[in-house]
Amino acid sequence: MDFDVIKPQLAAQLPGLLSKLNAYFPELTTEQAATCVCTTNPLSENTEAKLPSNVPSKLLEELIDISSDSSLRTRCKEMPLETFWCECSSEYITASSAALKSLIPFGATYLCETGFSAMPTRKTKYRTRMNIDRDVRLCLSKIPPRLDRIVDQHQQQVAH
Image (cartoon, rainbow, N blue to C red; front, side, top):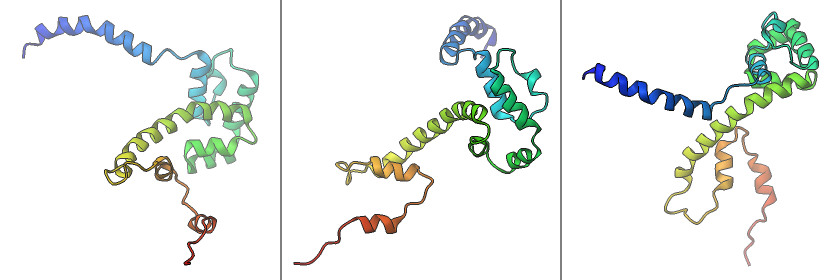
């Protein structure tokens, strides 16, 4: 294969590819970039220098408090990032809400993909008329069902 022939074709297609990528993934605003930095590494030192100047003061204060708290440092290392931010939500409201807003789309995308993967197993030719929304919800949930409560809620069939 002659790469000298392919190079001009690729060079002609790259600006179109770049414009499509920019349409799907636009540039982040300074506040969004600051949120991403703070979300992924909440305990980084010198937080003020990494953030743009127009970050709200309440957010900046909370991020500085989080980065200087030694007990949060150990808790953050022991748990996933989303769990850490959920636990911080009562004390650091502004920072945790900004962090969770940036983390939520990733979980939602993952659940959509998992849901589409679970559908073929639930919707077979024998179950085509069934409503599968509860089955899919059960497949996607990490919370184990409380079968004793489910059974108690249904009326038993009695013989006549």
